[in-house]
Image (cartoon, rainbow, N blue to C red; front, side, top):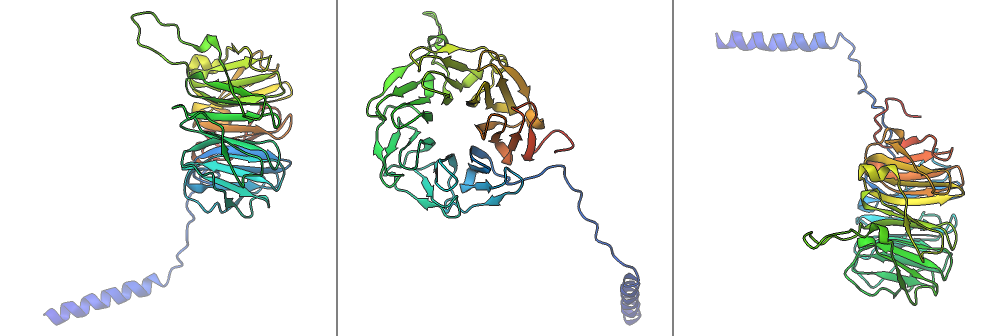
Length: 348
């Protein structure tokens, strides 16, 4: 009886296999998502020169486009740490800073990246080079480092105070500003040999004797269009401006302030200024920062935007969480999603 059952089972299996071979099995491709990714990693900083664009971020990510974003390539950073800032002075010479004292340099547009020794283990959150020799980087624990030889050697210019410096911007080899925690702004006119404090009284909290002590909102971005006109941005939608080189700063009302969302970067070109921040918020001014308009979720992006840069007066880039890369070619009237998760069904 057992033998008959076994034979019947084998016959049934063989018949099933033969029948399966009579039919053509078609492979059905998985559904295509309406999202395009250059990288899935968070992007923290973006730089542009001519038609070239570089973006850097978490886990040593560096992506590059040589044709204004039409195509992208991954560049090998050689590190696994989070990269926080990128800057280029031409299409060949660039630098990247990051956590744990990471400093990278390229002289071939990013085909190869080489580590530079900063002799420090502090996190380096921002950097700025004005030419192929002179540059500055800033970070936690009051770190300000300066180089005059393209990063071969770095010297400490910071006071070592227990504050985080989030942004640095220099117009030339002499004039520069640093911004950071608690509304901190420092300015120099001698290349960082000496620094003087600047502040905006309007962002200092007014408290009574019974209130808990409060600190001014931290600043995350600072940028000057010339020696007199500059903007800084930060927590709670703060935007402050100066028209005398920082001798006085005044608060500028804007829609992000009403939403209490942090603004991480502010940049300007001509009369157009753009600030980006949490929840995909973009605020734009077309009158040199006098008034600001809200673009909530530009391009359908609802994640944080961490940095932005102008390529020219009409073209700008912004990058952020989950591989977000946005481009505008019309002074921020519209944004094209080149990478990231958009809430709009169709992407350009």
